[in-house]
Image 1 (cartoon, rainbow, N blue to C red):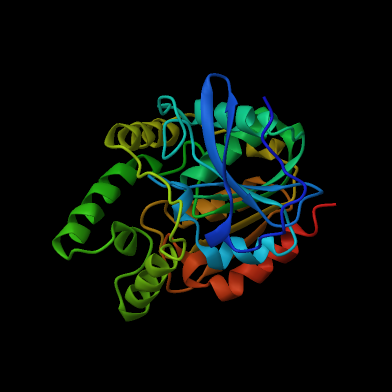
Image 2: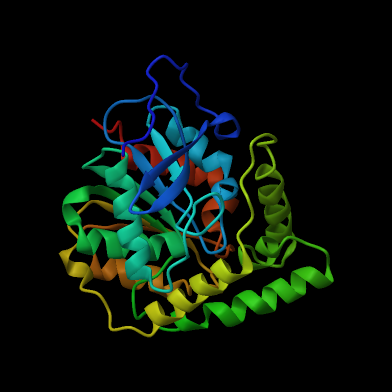
Length: 290
Protein backbone atom coordinates (compact mmCIF):
# COMPACT_ATOMS: atom_id res chain seq x y z
CA UNK A 1 0.00 0.00 0.00
CA UNK A 2 1.29 3.46 -0.81
CA UNK A 3 0.72 6.63 1.19
CA UNK A 4 -1.79 9.28 0.33
CA UNK A 5 0.07 12.03 -1.48
CA UNK A 6 -2.29 14.84 -2.51
CA UNK A 7 -0.90 17.11 -5.20
CA UNK A 8 -3.23 20.06 -4.65
CA UNK A 9 -2.15 20.95 -1.10
CA UNK A 10 -0.26 24.20 -0.51
CA UNK A 11 3.41 23.82 0.37
CA UNK A 12 3.84 23.77 4.14
CA UNK A 13 7.30 24.57 5.48
CA UNK A 14 6.53 24.70 9.22
CA UNK A 15 6.71 21.44 11.18
CA UNK A 16 4.08 22.83 13.55
CA UNK A 17 1.59 22.49 10.69
CA UNK A 18 2.91 19.35 8.94
CA UNK A 19 0.03 17.04 8.00
CA UNK A 20 -0.25 13.80 9.96
CA UNK A 21 -0.58 10.70 7.81
CA UNK A 22 -0.48 6.91 8.07
CA UNK A 23 0.61 4.12 5.75
CA UNK A 24 0.12 0.39 6.23
CA UNK A 25 2.90 -2.06 5.39
CA UNK A 26 4.00 -5.43 6.72
CA UNK A 27 1.12 -5.63 9.14
CA UNK A 28 2.01 -2.30 10.75
CA UNK A 29 0.34 1.08 10.37
CA UNK A 30 3.08 3.72 10.49
CA UNK A 31 2.32 7.24 11.65
CA UNK A 32 4.26 9.93 9.85
CA UNK A 33 4.29 13.60 8.91
CA UNK A 34 5.49 15.19 5.71
CA UNK A 35 5.97 18.75 4.59
CA UNK A 36 8.10 20.90 2.34
CA UNK A 37 7.99 20.96 -1.46
CA UNK A 38 7.36 17.61 -3.16
CA UNK A 39 9.63 16.24 -5.81
CA UNK A 40 13.14 14.89 -5.86
CA UNK A 41 14.63 12.72 -3.14
CA UNK A 42 12.98 13.10 0.29
CA UNK A 43 14.85 13.60 3.56
CA UNK A 44 13.64 11.00 6.05
CA UNK A 45 14.26 11.76 9.74
CA UNK A 46 15.16 8.92 12.13
CA UNK A 47 14.30 9.89 15.70
CA UNK A 48 15.93 9.29 19.09
CA UNK A 49 15.28 7.01 22.06
CA UNK A 50 11.76 7.35 23.52
CA UNK A 51 10.88 9.95 20.89
CA UNK A 52 7.73 10.40 18.85
CA UNK A 53 6.82 12.70 15.98
CA UNK A 54 6.66 15.61 18.43
CA UNK A 55 10.34 15.41 19.36
CA UNK A 56 11.93 17.03 16.32
CA UNK A 57 13.32 20.51 16.85
CA UNK A 58 11.56 22.86 14.41
CA UNK A 59 14.76 24.93 14.18
CA UNK A 60 16.37 21.93 12.50
CA UNK A 61 13.57 20.46 10.39
CA UNK A 62 12.02 23.73 9.18
CA UNK A 63 15.15 25.05 7.43
CA UNK A 64 15.57 21.72 5.64
CA UNK A 65 11.90 21.67 4.62
CA UNK A 66 12.26 25.12 3.07
CA UNK A 67 13.48 23.42 -0.12
CA UNK A 68 13.24 19.66 0.55
CA UNK A 69 10.46 17.13 0.97
CA UNK A 70 10.79 16.12 4.64
CA UNK A 71 9.29 13.00 6.22
CA UNK A 72 9.33 12.11 9.92
CA UNK A 73 7.91 8.85 11.25
CA UNK A 74 7.21 6.84 14.39
CA UNK A 75 9.07 3.57 14.75
CA UNK A 76 6.97 0.42 15.03
CA UNK A 77 5.12 0.30 18.34
CA UNK A 78 5.96 3.92 19.17
CA UNK A 79 3.61 6.91 19.28
CA UNK A 80 0.95 6.57 16.63
CA UNK A 81 2.50 3.53 14.91
CA UNK A 82 1.01 0.13 15.65
CA UNK A 83 2.74 -3.15 16.41
CA UNK A 84 5.32 -4.25 18.96
CA UNK A 85 8.59 -2.35 19.32
CA UNK A 86 11.56 -4.50 18.21
CA UNK A 87 14.31 -5.38 20.66
CA UNK A 88 17.05 -5.16 18.04
CA UNK A 89 18.37 -2.28 15.95
CA UNK A 90 18.53 -4.60 12.94
CA UNK A 91 14.77 -5.11 13.02
CA UNK A 92 14.18 -1.37 13.47
CA UNK A 93 16.23 -0.84 10.32
CA UNK A 94 14.14 -3.37 8.41
CA UNK A 95 10.99 -1.65 9.64
CA UNK A 96 12.35 1.66 8.36
CA UNK A 97 13.05 0.04 4.99
CA UNK A 98 9.49 -1.33 4.88
CA UNK A 99 8.09 2.11 5.72
CA UNK A 100 10.14 3.94 3.06
CA UNK A 101 9.32 1.42 0.34
CA UNK A 102 5.62 1.58 1.28
CA UNK A 103 5.73 5.29 0.49
CA UNK A 104 7.05 4.40 -2.96
CA UNK A 105 10.60 5.73 -2.63
CA UNK A 106 13.67 3.87 -3.87
CA UNK A 107 16.18 6.58 -2.88
CA UNK A 108 16.26 8.76 0.23
CA UNK A 109 18.52 11.05 2.19
CA UNK A 110 18.62 10.35 5.93
CA UNK A 111 18.86 12.74 8.85
CA UNK A 112 19.33 10.72 12.03
CA UNK A 113 19.80 11.52 15.70
CA UNK A 114 20.94 9.22 18.55
CA UNK A 115 19.05 5.88 18.35
CA UNK A 116 17.96 6.98 14.88
CA UNK A 117 21.61 7.13 13.84
CA UNK A 118 22.12 3.51 14.90
CA UNK A 119 19.08 2.47 12.86
CA UNK A 120 20.30 4.55 9.92
CA UNK A 121 23.72 2.88 9.94
CA UNK A 122 22.21 -0.61 9.96
CA UNK A 123 19.79 0.38 7.19
CA UNK A 124 22.60 1.79 5.05
CA UNK A 125 24.75 -1.31 5.54
CA UNK A 126 21.84 -3.65 4.72
CA UNK A 127 20.30 -1.59 1.88
CA UNK A 128 23.02 0.70 0.51
CA UNK A 129 21.10 1.27 -2.72
CA UNK A 130 18.35 3.08 -0.78
CA UNK A 131 20.50 5.81 0.76
CA UNK A 132 22.04 8.73 -1.13
CA UNK A 133 23.28 10.96 1.72
CA UNK A 134 23.57 10.38 5.44
CA UNK A 135 23.51 12.79 8.41
CA UNK A 136 24.49 11.09 11.69
CA UNK A 137 24.15 13.20 14.83
CA UNK A 138 24.57 12.35 18.51
CA UNK A 139 25.13 8.71 17.68
CA UNK A 140 27.73 5.96 17.59
CA UNK A 141 28.72 2.76 15.79
CA UNK A 142 27.67 -0.80 16.56
CA UNK A 143 29.95 -2.20 19.24
CA UNK A 144 31.18 1.27 20.21
CA UNK A 145 32.87 1.66 23.60
CA UNK A 146 30.37 2.35 26.42
CA UNK A 147 27.36 2.32 24.07
CA UNK A 148 25.80 -0.30 26.34
CA UNK A 149 25.74 2.18 29.25
CA UNK A 150 23.03 4.33 27.69
CA UNK A 151 20.34 2.77 29.89
CA UNK A 152 22.15 3.61 33.11
CA UNK A 153 22.71 7.23 32.10
CA UNK A 154 19.11 7.52 30.94
CA UNK A 155 17.55 6.26 34.18
CA UNK A 156 19.89 8.40 36.29
CA UNK A 157 18.95 11.55 34.39
CA UNK A 158 15.24 10.71 34.43
CA UNK A 159 15.56 10.49 38.23
CA UNK A 160 17.37 13.82 38.42
CA UNK A 161 14.78 15.46 36.20
CA UNK A 162 11.94 14.10 38.33
CA UNK A 163 13.46 15.64 41.45
CA UNK A 164 13.52 19.07 39.80
CA UNK A 165 10.24 18.66 37.89
CA UNK A 166 12.12 19.13 34.62
CA UNK A 167 11.97 17.43 31.25
CA UNK A 168 14.56 14.58 31.24
CA UNK A 169 15.90 15.86 27.92
CA UNK A 170 17.24 18.92 29.72
CA UNK A 171 19.58 16.58 31.61
CA UNK A 172 20.19 13.96 28.92
CA UNK A 173 20.88 16.32 26.02
CA UNK A 174 22.52 19.38 27.59
CA UNK A 175 25.32 20.27 29.99
CA UNK A 176 24.23 21.36 33.44
CA UNK A 177 26.04 24.70 33.34
CA UNK A 178 24.27 28.03 32.78
CA UNK A 179 24.62 27.80 29.00
CA UNK A 180 23.41 24.23 28.83
CA UNK A 181 20.49 24.81 31.16
CA UNK A 182 19.28 27.76 29.10
CA UNK A 183 19.69 25.80 25.85
CA UNK A 184 17.80 22.84 27.31
CA UNK A 185 14.82 24.90 28.42
CA UNK A 186 14.68 26.69 25.06
CA UNK A 187 14.77 23.34 23.22
CA UNK A 188 11.94 21.89 25.31
CA UNK A 189 9.82 24.99 24.69
CA UNK A 190 10.37 24.72 20.91
CA UNK A 191 8.99 21.18 20.99
CA UNK A 192 5.67 22.63 22.17
CA UNK A 193 5.18 24.86 19.11
CA UNK A 194 2.85 22.34 17.52
CA UNK A 195 -0.39 22.69 19.44
CA UNK A 196 -2.81 20.55 17.42
CA UNK A 197 -2.86 16.91 16.35
CA UNK A 198 0.01 15.99 18.63
CA UNK A 199 1.37 12.45 18.86
CA UNK A 200 0.86 9.85 21.58
CA UNK A 201 3.63 9.41 24.15
CA UNK A 202 5.81 6.32 23.99
CA UNK A 203 4.61 3.49 26.22
CA UNK A 204 6.92 2.10 28.95
CA UNK A 205 7.18 -1.32 27.27
CA UNK A 206 8.29 0.26 23.98
CA UNK A 207 10.84 2.42 25.81
CA UNK A 208 12.32 -0.62 27.55
CA UNK A 209 12.49 -2.51 24.25
CA UNK A 210 14.46 0.37 22.72
CA UNK A 211 16.88 0.40 25.65
CA UNK A 212 17.36 -3.36 25.27
CA UNK A 213 18.07 -2.92 21.56
CA UNK A 214 20.68 -0.23 22.25
CA UNK A 215 22.38 -2.43 24.85
CA UNK A 216 22.61 -5.32 22.37
CA UNK A 217 23.88 -2.95 19.69
CA UNK A 218 26.59 -1.68 22.02
CA UNK A 219 27.72 -5.21 22.86
CA UNK A 220 27.65 -6.53 19.28
CA UNK A 221 30.58 -7.00 16.95
CA UNK A 222 31.32 -3.78 15.03
CA UNK A 223 29.78 -3.27 11.60
CA UNK A 224 32.05 -2.72 8.63
CA UNK A 225 31.42 1.00 8.20
CA UNK A 226 34.02 1.03 5.44
CA UNK A 227 31.29 -0.15 3.07
CA UNK A 228 29.42 3.12 3.58
CA UNK A 229 30.43 5.19 0.57
CA UNK A 230 27.57 7.69 0.72
CA UNK A 231 28.47 11.30 1.56
CA UNK A 232 28.15 11.43 5.34
CA UNK A 233 27.94 14.35 7.77
CA UNK A 234 28.64 13.52 11.43
CA UNK A 235 27.94 15.97 14.25
CA UNK A 236 27.83 15.95 18.03
CA UNK A 237 28.61 17.95 21.14
CA UNK A 238 32.04 17.54 22.71
CA UNK A 239 30.60 16.34 26.03
CA UNK A 240 27.98 13.75 25.08
CA UNK A 241 27.24 11.61 28.14
CA UNK A 242 24.66 9.37 26.47
CA UNK A 243 26.59 8.34 23.35
CA UNK A 244 30.20 9.27 24.17
CA UNK A 245 31.60 11.99 21.91
CA UNK A 246 34.72 9.98 20.91
CA UNK A 247 32.40 7.59 19.06
CA UNK A 248 31.64 10.36 16.56
CA UNK A 249 35.36 10.54 15.83
CA UNK A 250 35.41 6.73 15.55
CA UNK A 251 32.67 6.79 12.90
CA UNK A 252 34.42 9.61 11.08
CA UNK A 253 37.65 7.60 10.90
CA UNK A 254 35.82 4.56 9.51
CA UNK A 255 33.52 6.22 6.95
CA UNK A 256 35.76 7.43 4.16
CA UNK A 257 35.25 11.03 3.09
CA UNK A 258 32.88 11.83 5.95
CA UNK A 259 32.72 15.28 7.51
CA UNK A 260 32.86 15.70 11.30
CA UNK A 261 31.60 18.66 13.35
CA UNK A 262 32.06 18.77 17.12
CA UNK A 263 30.37 21.62 18.96
CA UNK A 264 32.14 23.00 22.05
CA UNK A 265 30.65 23.10 25.55
CA UNK A 266 27.66 20.98 24.57
CA UNK A 267 26.32 17.50 25.08
CA UNK A 268 24.14 14.95 23.32
CA UNK A 269 21.92 17.73 21.97
CA UNK A 270 24.79 19.78 20.58
CA UNK A 271 23.05 20.25 17.24
CA UNK A 272 20.00 21.66 19.03
CA UNK A 273 22.06 23.96 21.23
CA UNK A 274 23.88 25.21 18.12
CA UNK A 275 20.92 25.03 15.75
CA UNK A 276 21.70 28.45 14.24
CA UNK A 277 25.10 27.13 13.16
CA UNK A 278 24.18 23.57 12.34
CA UNK A 279 20.96 23.96 10.35
CA UNK A 280 22.61 25.89 7.48
CA UNK A 281 25.40 23.30 7.34
CA UNK A 282 22.87 20.48 7.11
CA UNK A 283 20.88 22.33 4.45
CA UNK A 284 23.99 22.85 2.32
CA UNK A 285 25.15 19.27 2.78
CA UNK A 286 21.78 17.78 1.81
CA UNK A 287 21.45 20.03 -1.23
CA UNK A 288 18.33 20.27 -3.37
CA UNK A 289 17.53 16.58 -3.67
CA UNK A 290 17.71 16.44 -7.44
